[in-house]
Length: 233
Image 1 (cartoon, rainbow, N blue to C red):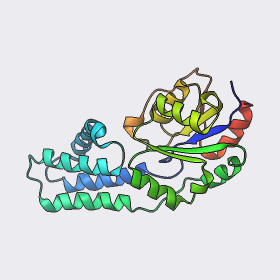
Image 2 (cartoon, helix red, strand yellow; image 1 turned 90 degrees about the horizontal axis):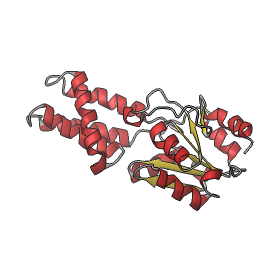
Image 3 (cartoon, rainbow, N blue to C red; image 1 turned 30 degrees about the horizontal axis):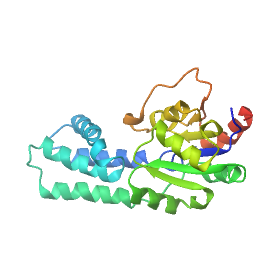
Image 4 (tube, helix red, strand yellow; image 1 turned 180 degrees about the horizontal axis):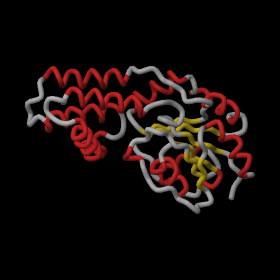
């Protein structure tokens, strides 16, 4: 078990707010289709479209926009007005220009860890949007590397932690998604630190790996330095 040298951080809903804007836009989408379909059914159809389209569009706002348009066409049997499509696209554009809201304690924690560890931002989603959010966050200079990937798998972490650090056994991944941030990192021998967020997307849900010695959970990022100290790695 190598000494910890590299820490990977998820971005959305780990460093800054993200899912809340998807939820607000989904509510707006429900209202736009209210004369055609019940709100609950609209959300269910939208989620189904997102699942179906992940392989085509990937993660992020643009894929979400396309799934909303597809759902609107499907739910109205092709009769959705052009004005409604325009409003859906406008809602997506609003998301793409929304200011960054850092979560509590993020900047202070990164500043504390940066002198002693190699910090790597590992995020998935649309390249331009993730670059925009990182630039607006003011956190960019704290990271030794930035990886914007199409998906997060065991192979992803194996590549990144061997490139930036001293291998997977000397690395830790921190994030709010068990499915994307924690489980695949543990699979390659890294520490996986779970920070729950109340609005984590349902597609990112997974069972906790209870009993796994390299799985840890904390309430917020501010607890990470003490956790690292307690591991004595």
